[in-house]
Image (cartoon, rainbow, N blue to C red; front, side):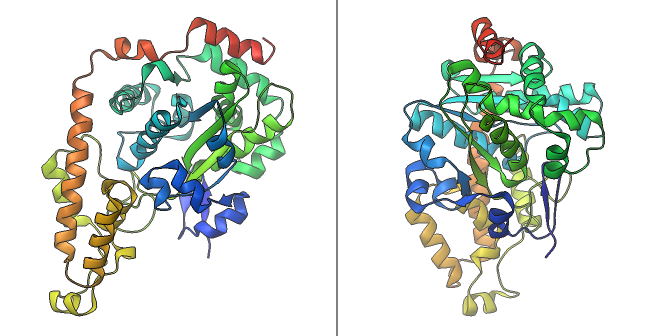
Length: 373
């Protein structure tokens, strides 16, 4: 089976178990999934990683999860941020959120003006998640170049061209050739600012190359940092079938969709595990593993484990029809989006809102000094 999983291309039927061997990651232990204390971990969406137990046992912790502003955000984009907020609250972890606007300019057919427009809207969605500003730092590559570039330039000397091409393939331009150094700056920045400690990076599996490169840089022991840990997640499927939820491929639910749009998308497009007729469904039951609305409930939108088991059993036994399951999932997602959109609408001007999340002058200086500048 052919599959391609890189930060810039995902294709084929994804074999998540095979990726464990390809990427050199370990399946999460059941005990660690429970300690993480969130449905995304408990229900095997975040299913593998590196050094997760170190993060769980540490006295000082940070979490890094970012966003590339290539369009409006959808559900698949925002769930890692809500997970990071959970880790912030449950483990008193500092959260760093890098926004890679420069990468999207290199990788996408869009102008910097378009990228900046997406950036500003994406930032408002990140702020709507509700992170604690005292314990959160939001970094924008082009706005924080006084930190990002000098740190990346220091790390660039530790990443060989052959290592870069072996990890990412041949880049289409020199911007993407340099970008592994920028991503390493993102992932090691918490330790440059706060000193060596346990860092965890919860990401979809296609972003894992960035973590592997940063771990290689950290292993060279030139700086007072340790290897960041990784928590690798499966893709939330597009509504119309298995695979990665994408803004450009398939049908996605966007964070600004109104309730009627959400219901219409799920009713008209959601791939189900139901049978061809009601009679057959009553007789044979549905297949939850193939049902996209059920997968959405399982991943995030039904937090009660007992309730989820009841829904699965009723669907598998044919008591719950596909249309009823679609309605149930739609209403859960509508409720989630209503709260998210309300927080987003209540935000003031973006510059004022971001002020308390920015790196301080002292933090900027500490980051630069940590790499010898």
